[in-house]
Image (cartoon, rainbow, N blue to C red):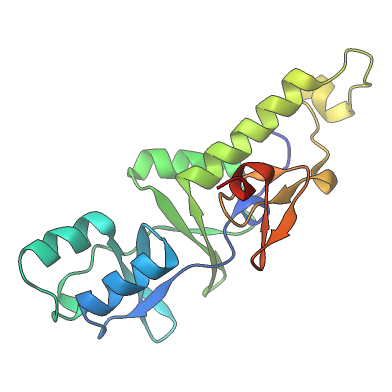
Length: 183
């Protein structure tokens, strides 16, 4: 994918962070209320670990509801700069075997990039490639690399599923694509 899409273009700008001193019960309740599969464990503003639903469920079954996250957390989520290409992010997700990356600008966490975000962005680019009219002029970039330029100015990111969509509508305070509004 050599179309200039960066991690910043497709990342989820909001992520759920918890303190390392929070209990498993508090983190699990937050995960449920925020409908998230993982939280970032923070020491102040520094990401030091993560907690996945699998880890949380296992610890809950072991009766560790009041255990602080510092004793239960998974290793820290790998980080990636917001200016990195989507291709680099995809390779990092695959090579590390993680389902998400913490997006940073320098030392500051600015978002989260999940497998779902990456798949949605790849799908959007593939759809644009197959729908391109034969009479459409090729850009200099597309002639040399074989990729098709995507007009990102007409795409927006759905706050429900994270996919790029040509049109979003407000639904309960969120900008959602047609698929998410249907639920």
